[in-house]
Image 1 (tube, rainbow, N blue to C red):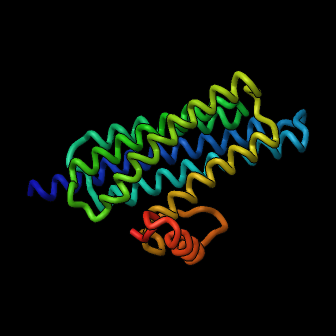
Image 2 (cartoon, rainbow, N blue to C red; image 1 turned 60 degrees about the vertical axis):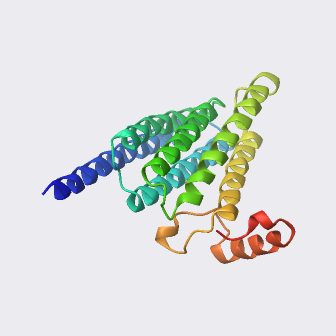
Length: 227
């Protein structure tokens, strides 16, 4: 009976987090239509720039959520700590998407907060499951997202004060490429199974091609070996 109750509680907690993300994504879509697609005063160029950024942010947030859900299903909650971290990350995700709709470069602050919280989440998961088969990936998340956060925050302040706080087409493309590089490097360093349980991957590059690139790089950089 206690085991059954615990499993039902885990299911309820996961459902609540999924509901929060569903609300976030719905609000993002509504804001996109209201502020980006429908306004007649916006030019085609402005709408294109805005949509590129919003779609890129939307994909990254979905990628992050789906990876967290995959790892949680394989390493279920043993306490409420990771649940509350995920709730806070969902608020951060909404802030990032809303600022992207407004074409404000400050959307990156919310992205980096989410990445840092994700690193803490990975550390908490590893503490709960030190022998997890996902231990390498969880350790990589800690290091990778923490480093990316500090480098990204430094670049953000330089961009904000030296270039512009407003995002145009070239900035939208640059930020999306920045996100694609993040996901691509993750795919190279963490060899996940094919299919649904492998989680989403870098756009336009399938797993076989990523595996070939990793194999080629591992000849020159042994640390790139498959994990």
